[in-house]
Amino acid sequence: MTLGGLSARLPAGRGTLGETLAALEASGAVLRGTGSGRMLYRLTEVGQALGAACIEMTRVIPNEEVLNVALKKWPMLVVTLIGRGFGRFNELEAGLPGITSRALALSLKDLEAARMITRELKPGYPPTTIYTLTPLTEAIFPALDALCAAAEATAPPP
Image 1 (tube, rainbow, N blue to C red):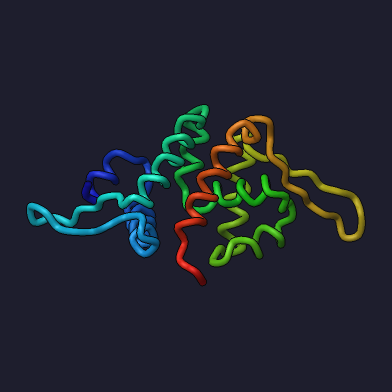
Image 2 (tube, one colour; image 1 turned 90 degrees about the vertical axis):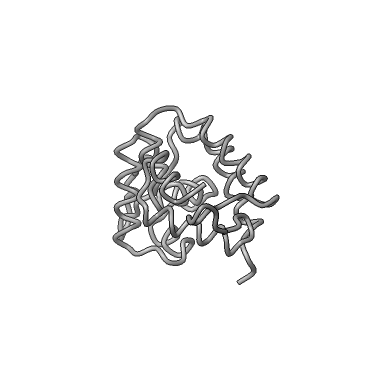
């Protein structure tokens, strides 16, 4: 499939898709080649296993509002960390190399607006904000965690 074909089928930005394909190629999940004068992408065996986890994830997404958040660059990684027990802003930021404070704040706002996480202010000095999954997100978390585990298994060593 071509980048244009993927872009037409998915409501995700072309830049995000390009970055994702480059990362999948680097991990060995996707092979890039040419055909009919166009750049084509195809899944490797590793990519097929990762694809199966992706299909399961798309099966459990309950509505378009969640899908729109899920297709952005950072929110589902934020959900994964929250589901794995990281509930504070600094923990989330430390657990996501490459994310900026602004991108994390925007992801948290998107997730809260989609009713995927809750934000609770704990009293104390200084007050602490804790993020937790809502029942909606707890229902999809097992598939998301399995997808992240499959992706982590394909990641090249640091």
